[in-house]
Image 1 (cartoon, rainbow, N blue to C red):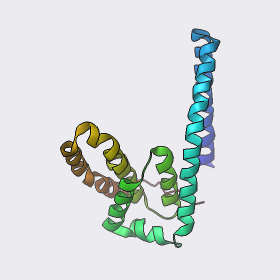
Image 2: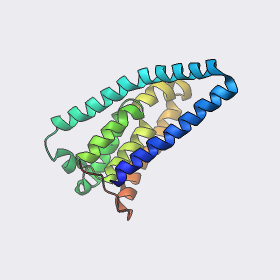
Image 3: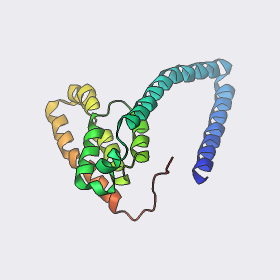
Length: 176
């Protein structure tokens, strides 16, 4: 129930901010600027919704393909360091931005991954995503610096997972 209220509160706040921004654009910049803003928003939505849909579909099909309890054994609280290393590796190879990665995070949580494995996955994806390193870092910063940064950040995902497992937080993923 609390989660549902939080979702509605987030939607309400975002709606109010959006409406206030639209009114401000219309008053300060005119109706043409508001139309351009709406057109830009529709273009962005046309790009994001297919990617989000594909990410959600990929996450849902992965969950169906894996044997029941497999993710819990591999990434659950009892998986130890092996689970954190596996989650970190999965984060490194997961392509795309948050629209693609976070549906996978939901699948991991709902399939029995513990918070340490999820933290390791997110940190590894954010810090050492292989796709980003190949496309952005190596061409812009060079191989030597990119390798140095990658190696320096490599243990951070596992360390973050270990810290998350030991924190006295009472949060547990909501079962569905």
